[in-house]
Amino acid sequence: MRVATLLRWGALTLLVTFLLAPQWFAPVFAPLTEYGAPPIYDQGNLLVLALAHLATVCLAAAASTVVAVGLGILVTRPSGREFLPLSRTLVNIGQTFPPVAVLAVTVPLVGFGEKPTLIALFAYGLLPIFENTIIGIQTCPTAVLEAASGMGMSARQRLLSVELPVAMPLILEGIRLSLVINVGTATIGSTVAAKGLGEVIIAGLLSNNTAFILQGGLVTGLMAILLYDAMVAFEKRVLRRVRIE
Amino acid sequence: MITVENLCKRYGETTIVDAVSMTIAKNSITVIVGTSGSGKSTLLRMINRLVEPTGGRVLIDGQDTRAEPAHLLRRRIGYAIQGHGLFPHRTVGENIATVPQLLGWEPARIRARVEELLSVFQLDPKEYADAYPHELSGGQQQRVGVARALAAEPAVLLMDEPYGALDPIIRAKAQADLLEIQRRFGTTIVLVTHDMDEAFHLGDHVAVMSQGRLLQYDRPAVLLTRPADPFVARMTGLADRALRLLSLTTAGEAAVPGLSAGPRVAASVSLREALSELVWKGAESAQVIDADGTARGHLTVASILGHGRPA
Image (tube, each protein chain N blue to C red):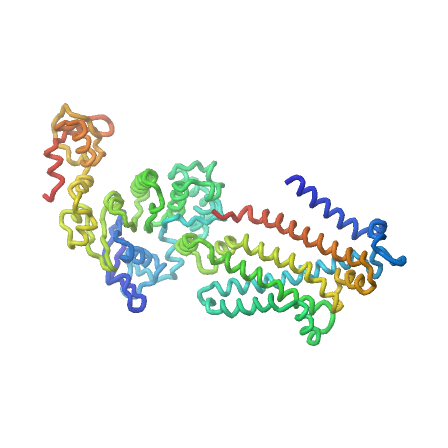
């Protein structure tokens, strides 16, 4: 446990240091370059790119969360149960349709930049949150639900003070999955001119610069791992009050 | 007083509860007993409208239960179920405070009530108020479930197989607690069970249901001595009906003046236990002793046996 924590803080320190002062790492990446190409990405500020990348991912996840949790709640109400198969199909399409294809379809509609990327990530991130919300709500013990109604909670009170808190661990897990998947997926946004770490990788591919490719990949990977850990820590805090028997 | 009038529940062609009428007296314990699928739970759940009746009506103290929205009605009626249904994300104290909070009680009043109930149920408030349900034993969880049902001082408490998941020793303790609590708060309790022993032990009145119909509704002794239906006789147990009858009378009630050199039995034990004691000791008579140690009278084997058959 100690070692794991130490590793995490080490990874965070490494990431922040690299983003703030990438030139310090020039000697490390120099062997990967040929013909005197720059060892550190020089066509933009890495910190700005990383933050833009993170912002895109978080924005998309926030939108996915609102829609997927909302839909999950709707289809678990008695009045919305008949929409479950339809919603499930729609959300599944969002996951099966490759994000690259989504970009190809949306660029003509909304133009280049952040928008098509946000749409692709939003659609891609719906499924884990939606399914986890449904399972979380559906697996709430019947005795607990019956007690909530028997105590005199209205349908709304029951949802807000029993069903959602009990489903919270699974919902948060879904959000975490969605976030982590999309940190990696967001790199493709750079193909349609969205600001992000994909730029670094693409620049590396175009100029045959392995150092760039590695930098883009490593920063993205570290961000995904750290985001995962941060979510786990956050979930633990929240769930201290949402324990299941 | 709860008046059930011609209450029916049908799902399509299937009749779950078939025209049940009964009057449940204030400050008493009524046990509804029946096999699974007899409609007993549905009948109970129609009292607090967790199930809406297809026909008939329920009056509580003369007021039709449909006069207000169902969730408001339920806040006035305690409800305890098998498997307790405690909210896993709330502490014991918060669980018990559920209905008072819904009713908008002052925080100080809620706190006082939670502590009172925890003490009544022999759970130290300091130790348990902030514990989570999963940290309690099954018996403790069950007690918290009943405490939660009683939190807002309801005049009526509905219990659906509340002790079904407990082992026999904890169940006996929970039953004794329930009798004590009923005396203390004067709550009108309606309890559903499939366990005839439980029904006879707890019920001032017992209602026997089968296939949606109320077969007989009377005092336990009457169910034994004058079953209205062969099914009632089977439910109440033909083989040991004499012993069951003995278990309904206490030694104190049956004692007649006089002294005995035989074993001493407490006035609070049932005749069944007193008889068992006499058989065990090989004695012909027993001395009945009150709780304060004074002699109440005596019992002979013959006088005990007289209580084990219809008068």
